[in-house]
Image (cartoon, one colour):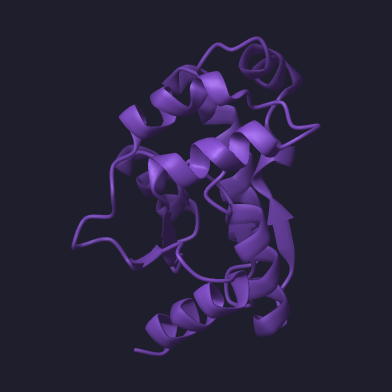
Length: 157
């Protein structure tokens, strides 16, 4: 989980590979109308996000007991609660990236529907993990491999 540009896709694919689990790109669950809305520079509302979250939750639920890794922003507690309701064993990895790093990544990224202009709304919506949520906060200050090693260490605890 994390804001756009925090490294969810990169870290998620490495994590899935190291765990030997299937991977799903959360962006693929967005309905076309939501993608068009974001591409036009408009942030999504909760109502826009529910079908997307339900699709990601369904993917996770199908893998209950066997596991899977999905990259999903899950910025708000209520979004994570919705994912947990469908897949009670979910473990969240919050990729904690500084705004400046994310802004630079978004400015350099090509071919993605999420414009850098939405970064402010992403950080405004972000609610870090609460103590009672299963997961870990991992700073994004190293290589993806090192970040995944941190995640795996936290998973083993």
